[in-house]
Image 1 (tube, rainbow, N blue to C red):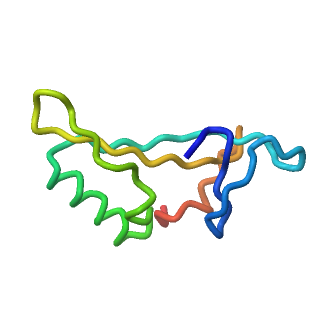
Image 2: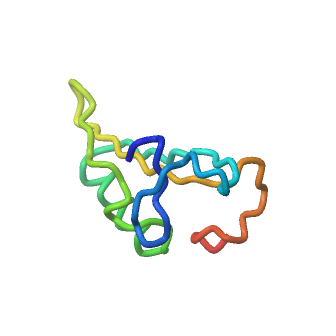
Length: 90
């Protein structure tokens, strides 16, 4: 997803420059491990309701190792400390 776009709750892209939108902070979650380990964690995060499987980037191989990486990008209101809206239930 390009940085200048955000996805709304229906998944449609919209420009980030909308004057009515508050400033948003980009948060990146990264998983690094074997292909099997990374896929297991993605499935676990789906089971606990943290992220859909398709929200993660495609697996990226780490050169000269058996390691892979994937990234999940989320946005939050800049300066917000409220964690009550997070899906993890914590």
